[in-house]
Amino acid sequence: MEMYRKTLEILKDLLQKSDNGHWAQWVDRDIVEWDSSKSTTHHISAFGGMGSINDLWVGGNGKIGTWNNNLFDLLKSISLTFAT
Image (tube, rainbow, N blue to C red; front, side, top):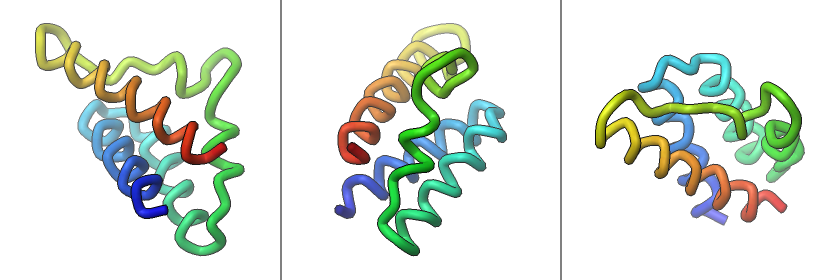
């Protein structure tokens, strides 16, 4: 499922560019686990509860920030759908 991996790569890129290093590393581990064993368990565990990836905002101010955050929300949803 190449689309799942590509979605993770874009998520990681958005997280890095928005200075969310913790979550960028988290998604990097998701990529490694997918590549090595096709496991999605770690990625799924990022969703739900306080402090989860669901609570994250990656956009800044203005139209570009809003666009980035909307893209991020869409990619999170797509990645979770692929993972489950």
